[in-house]
Every structure is written in structure tokens, then in C-alpha cells.
Length: 445
Ligand code: AMP
Ligand code: GLY
Image (cartoon, rainbow, N blue to C red; front, side):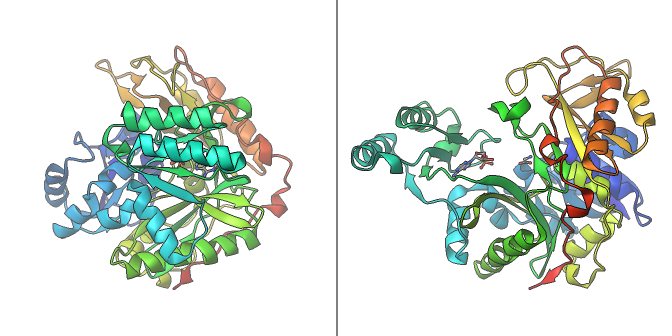
């Protein structure tokens, strides 16, 4: 079966690489892809949002499954467009993708499903929000909501976590008066700042069964010790050590199951990856946000550990028979992914630097270098083409060994201005492998 993957990041390289390993896979195409997907699969020079051209390509090439990687095409209705054209798709409908694309839709589903989340207040006027805040501050200064969120999709920039009232007012001004995020800031919410351990749980669901994936831990801050600006993710390890089996059970029962049920009741049945961003608070897990796709870079260490056939799993989901599948098998060894980034990221950066050492890194055992922002230049050299450039991923007998192998591979690779965090997975190194959480089987709803 031929497969078409949409997107061009590290997540899509990992998906295409794993899909290609399936005994059932024919040609695996990635649109538009990067220099890495061109090696492990075949690139198609079409934008991930050019639906008419992608549909024509899929029909011409006899594509049996379309896998949609990023949130932008999903929120623009990619899955609906392909389904209407008679193609099989892994990914949620536009309606269901609003769970990520619209914070108001997300909060509505959480409320209807009785799923715990931060207390919040909606505004469309900056003046009104600031007036209400000042009144509340005069009355109950400790209860001022400190998180400001734009309603719409804002490429990871729509959330501002503040420390005091002045900062909140500046954030409101940036979103609702200076319109720094454009239409995404037409409405915004002020939210209670949650305290606890942040964790994410990803599950594959066809709306009838839920298959939780082994939890992975992202590293969102740019610099070591979680300092510096927020990024798309500077590294990840799997399994996460913050979620033990009983907490995973609780998250499935209290968050994933009611969310999938509620979406179905709202005529927006969900099929694809449901990614719950959570704060593990004293009283239990609270939802910070949902994403409707694999996390990037979380996808890379998770798929390094998957031993089962990914194409089988994604096909079964697209066909609504996930509950009938045998539980997938996972490599018991943990995996660590270190993101190598361009100088300046997450701010402005230059592209076009020649990357060396990729072959040497690829020789190392249990290492896979996933490409993100890369392309080939006119001379055929692999050059940088984005902020997050590579996701260097390794398996090890324990997290310490996986980390050491990933950084050994990182040291082989060079380009002008390349950098990475040096502390990916450090928080998990002390945990013995025997205590690492075991993933669950599919739960039928
Ligand atoms: P998001 O873009 O929704 O993933 O939010 C970015 C980051 O902001 C999250 O990963 C959290 O670290 C933080 N955040 C979002 N909402 C809250 C909240 N209500 N309380 C504390 N931190 C939050
Ligand atoms: N790594 C966070 C995300 O994919 O949203």
C-alpha cells in the first residue's frame, strides 16, 4: 500500500521512517518533506495545505492511506477534504481538530465532559479585561488569573504565563490591542495559573477504542535547567517517569474517555492522535490544552520504541477497527531525542548552513537522526532550513545510556551556529528501568 504523509518536521520524518518499515508499505511519500524524508521515503513538492493538488497526487499514485502530521492542515479541514475524495485518512476532522485550534471549543468540550481544567474567563475587549482584573486585584490580589491565552491557533505563541498583574496587562495589550497574533487574538481568555508537574499523554483513538501510547516528556524551554523562552520542544524522552501506571489509568478514565465520548455526542467524533497536555496538581490531573496530532519531538522517541507495524495501527484507526488490533509491542528500552537547533532559534535565525557528520552519526548503534529543518542545496549538500534542524534519537538499556548515545551522535554533527540543550532527560536518569511505566492496551469505549 502506498502512503502519503503530510508535513516536513521531525515528527513526519519519524512517521515516514516507521511506516516504510511495514511489510505492507509500498511507496511512502512525504509532502513537502525534508532532506531526511527524501532518504527514507520520497518527497513530493506540494505544500501540506494544497488539498486539491494533494488529492490529485494521491489518486494518481494509488495512495491507500493519508497521514496528516501537523495541526495547521488538520484545522483547515485536510482530513475532510481527503475523505470526501474517497481516500482513507489518519487524522481528525476539521470540527474535531478545533480541540486544538480553538481554546473556546476545547473548554466547551471539557465542561460538557466534566474534565478538570484551570478556571478561566473569556474576553473580547482588552479594556474590559484590564478593568475586571484591576477590580479583582484590589479585592483579592492572590486570585488574579496569571495566564493569558489567545483563542485561535498561534504557532505555539498564543499562551503567556505571567508572574504579576503588570505582566498580565502587557500580555493582554500585546494580544488584543497590538494584535501581535492577528485574528487568533480576536477573543482571549484569562486563566488560573496551575501549580504541579507538567506531563503529556498521547493516545491513538478511532472514537470507539483508545490506545494510550507510552508517555513521553518534552523539554519546552530553550535552555538548560528549563530556562529561557518557550520553543516547539528541544528534546524528549520516553517513557516519562512522572506518570506511573495508576496515574496513567486515572488520566485515561478522567480525561481521555470523557473527552472522546463528549466529542462524539457533539457530532465531532475524533479519530487520530489525542494529545493531552496536563498539569498533575495536588488534587489530580488538570487539562492545560489538547493537541490533535503527535507531539514533535515526542513522536521521535515514542516511534523509536514501537516494535509493531505502525501502518497496521494507523490503518486500523482510519477504518474504525482499532479495538480489534492486538496490543502493540514496545521496545522495553527507553529512548532519548536531542533537538539540534539553528543559532538564534526560537527567535530569528539564518538558514543554508551546510551540515556535516550525518553519516558518522548514522553509524552509531541504536541511533537515528531524524531531520526537521533540512533540505538539499543546488549542489546536493544537506543544509539547514529551519529553527529546529535535527532530532538526534537513541535507544539505551536505561535512560542514562540512551542519553549518552544521543549526545555521542550529536557530537559527530556540525554546522555554523548549531546548538542543543545539554540536559535532556537528566530529570529521569535516577529512575531504575524496572520502575518505568508500562503502557496500557487499547480500551474499548
Ligand atoms: P500551550 O501552548 O497551551 O501548550 O501552553 C504553553 C505552556 O504554558 C504549557 O506547556 C504550560 O507550561 C504553560 N501553561 C499553559 N496554561 C497554564 C496554566 N493554566 N497554568 C500554568 N501553566 C500553564
Ligand atoms: N512538543 C510539543 C508539541 O508538539 O506541541
